[in-house]
Image (cartoon, rainbow, N blue to C red; front, side, top):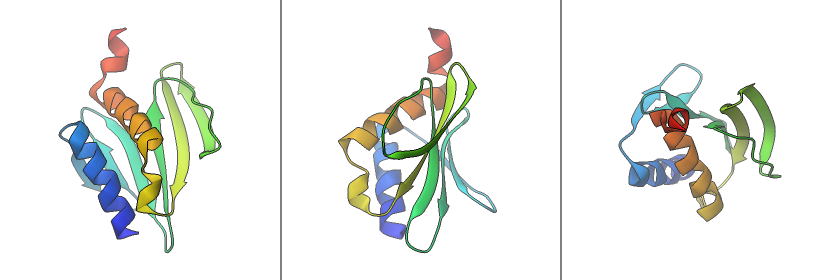
Length: 105
C-alpha cells in the first residue's frame, strides 16, 4: 500500500504544496483545511475526499453531505494505477476545497 500512498502524494504535490498530518487513525492531507485523508489497511487504502459538490461514481463507497459545499466522498484504493486521470481531477477539486477557493464563488 505504500506505493499507492506514494502515488497519491505525488499527484497532490504536483497540484500544490501540502502538509501531511500523520494522526493516530489516519493520514490527512492539509492546505488551509484538510481536504483528503487515508487510512491504511493491509491490502488497500480507505480514504475520503472533501469536494464542493456531490459527484456520482461507482468508485465512491459512500457520500456524506455535511453542507452544500462540503461533501465527503469515501473511496478505496488498491493499486497506484487507480490514481488515474479521473481520480486526479477529484484530488484537484478537493485541493481547491482545502484552499477555501470553493467559498469564493
